Every structure is written in C-alpha cells, then in structure tokens.
Length: 486
Ligand code: G6P
View 1 (cartoon, rainbow, N blue to C red):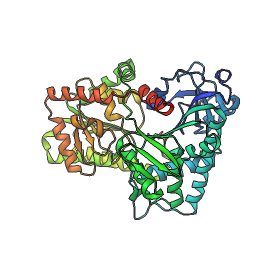
View 2: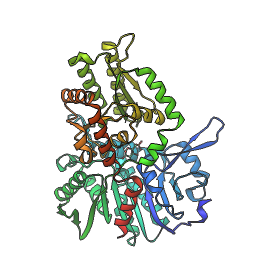
View 3: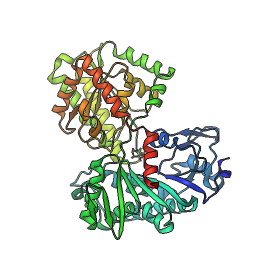
View 4: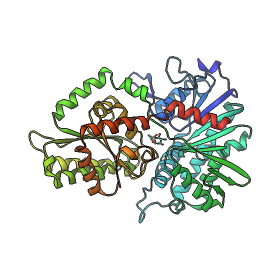
C-alpha cells in the first residue's frame, strides 16, 4: 500500500482540492467501487510520477466516507489505479459541516459571485443561516490546512485548488511558514463592484486567504487582474498590473496566468475506442444527412443553456430554410442538484426543449435531441460528429469543451464561442464570437457557422486545435510547480 512509501510529514509535493482524483460508489452487495475522476487536474498530476506526493481531498458522500474509515490514516490504498502514483488522503468532514461549506458557501455564494449569477432583487441574502455556513466553510478550510500541515515535508510545495479552499493558503502559512504555497482559481474572478456584495469580513477573508499564498494562479489575465482590482479596492493593497503582483500587509503574492489546455493525446485515443464508435453510429442514424449543432455542458446556470436553446429556436423561426435540415444535439448532464436553482434550471432546459420539438418537429425530423444524463463516450461521439459547436456561457473560467471539440472533430467543426469564456482569449481568432445574452446575434452566429465553407472550416479547426492544446494539463501542472519552487 502507498502509505509505506510516504509517511506523514514526508510529502515534497501536495495538491489539495475539494473533489479528489477518485470517488467511490457502493454496490448492491455492500462492496465499494472506485472511479477515477476526469478533468485537467487529474491528468495534470499524472505528470508527477512521484510516489511520495500526496493529494488531500474531501469525502463527498457516504461511500467515500466508508472508504476512508477502512483506510489507515485516511490514506486510500490506490494500488492498481492509474492516478499518478501519489497517495490520496480523503478528509472525512462531518456531513453537516461539509454540506454548509460546499453547498452554502462554495457553490451558492462564491460560485455565484464569480459567475455574476445573482438575481439581484432577491439574492444574495446574508443572514444568520449564511453565518452558520460561513462558520462551516472556515472549519472545512481549517481541516484541509491541518491535514496539509501534517503531510508536508519541510519546504514542500503545496498546490491548493479553487474557491472551495480560498482560506487554506493563509491558514496553512500560519501553521507552516516554511512551505511554498500556491493557490489556483479555476473560476473567473468578479469585478470589485460585484464582489463587494459579500459581507465585508467575508470578502476580506477570501482575498487575504488567497494572499497567504506565494503565488495565486488564474486561467486568464482577465481573471488575475480582477482579483488584483478586488485586492486594491477592498484591502487597499498595492497592485502592479504589469508585473502581476499584489502587496498587502508586508507580503507580496505573485499572480500567475496558466491557460489550461486540452489533453490531445488522451482525447484522440479515447475518442476512437469502440464504445465511442458505437455511439457515433447511433447518433448518425438519428441525424441522417442533416447538419448538427452540438453542445455539451454540466447543467450549470453559467453555461447559458436556456439562451442557447432560444437562439436555436430563433434560427428555425427566422431562417425557415433550416427546418428539416439541422439537428441540435444538446447534452446537459446533471450537476449540483442539491441546489434548488440548479433543479429549476434543469426543468427550464427540458421545458424549452419540449417547446422547440413541439413547434417544429415532424414525423421525419426531431429538431432537438436533449440528453440530461452523463455519458462521456457519447459526448466524445458528438464532438466527432459536430458541424457546429455552441459554447455560449454567461461567464466561464476557461471552458474546456471549446478546446476539446476542435481536437476530436472528424471533419472540422465551426465554433460559436461566447466572448465571456476564458477560452475566448486564446480561440477568438478562429471562432465565431458572440455576446451570450444576445439570442438574435447567437442565432445569426449559428447560421454563419452552418454555412461556413468546408475548406475554411477545416483550416479554422486546425488552428483552433493547435491553440487549444498549447498548454496540455501535464505542462500546465509542471509550470505552476516550477514557478512556485523557482
Ligand atoms: C468547476 C470547478 C471545479 C468543480 C467542477 C465540478 O469546474 O472549478 O472545482 O469540481 O466545476 O463541480 P462539482 O461541484 O461537481 O465538483
């Protein structure tokens, strides 16, 4: 088991994130099955084949908690699973505390702030319930800081991920001033006038929490500068916008920009396995010789799925020549269903999808195929098939779908891309860019994309794929680690 090669206090490299590289589910017979997570962080860490690295994460459900209870020191035995060789320590945080921290503060407050999602006349409401949630968020962050302090070797490099753990850098520095601490935000950052909606002490704690790091990383320069602006406006910090540093209370934190790219090797191999081929055949059968507009998202408020569907409806109404000649394939897989806003959003997506099929559908033609269950091989099949990809978030840290589709596409794919996605900074030149709030402009962009000449489409897709893979996850991870140590 991995716990012998890395006793507590010996890890030279540590990663901390809410969702870890593995998760468990329990089978009918009571046994536990382990699943490896996807995403850039998991593939990024595979670059570190260091068996003494430790990944600290939270147990997310009952099956995870059960696995932790069976594991020595909370360290999971991952022998035989390809998760990069490092040990995983899952924290069994009291379920109520976890839920208040994760749902109440991380997903309902910080996520909403950074993605500008509040419905301002009624939300947010910072009342005594929020105060309990904030207390739990502090306890949850403290549990991470303590576990990291116990696992880290002297002078170790610690990479703390995302808005769930914004207090960890400062808390950890208090416990272990010898460590090199990095924080990385996978979300956008709100501008000061929006961010200051948070209660003053909370807004300041989040900023000073991250400023406890030696380096604070962001996906784009735009988000890094928004963070710096918040530090200046709310803390009176000194900001160097060109040199990307923030100085506050006698310490300087360097800001880094690391635009996570798609994992080309993994995607190209994975998207040609038989399970993907089978789903591609089924999609082709359903679509016939019609054009396809594809979108793949978590059912996430910031992904702007409803306006995307309204734009497609506007396209069919305003340019009836497309009726019968195009199919919109929309995969909106479940996410954060503990939050009522997400359940309502899912219902709204389904309602509009029905309306579109009712209004335009014929016995021969179903204008919209909506799937609300997750199926990764089916998503890859849709990536391969797509003539047009619609990526229209209201706001997005990066958006990897925009980067993955050009890499996987079989015949070239025209990309309709929101100017509010982080990926816009790298992909704008060869995408058709849109204001995500403007459904008429989005419908026109879809029309332009559908009528793009094939040669132009192929050329653009090649250039998009090159830009999208400029910083693969392994290099993205190593860059941060080297910058932190350098
Ligand atoms: C975003 C966040 C991640 C998060 C993911 C899925 O990409 O930046 O930290 O893990 O969404 O959300 P979930 O709440 O399911 O972990």
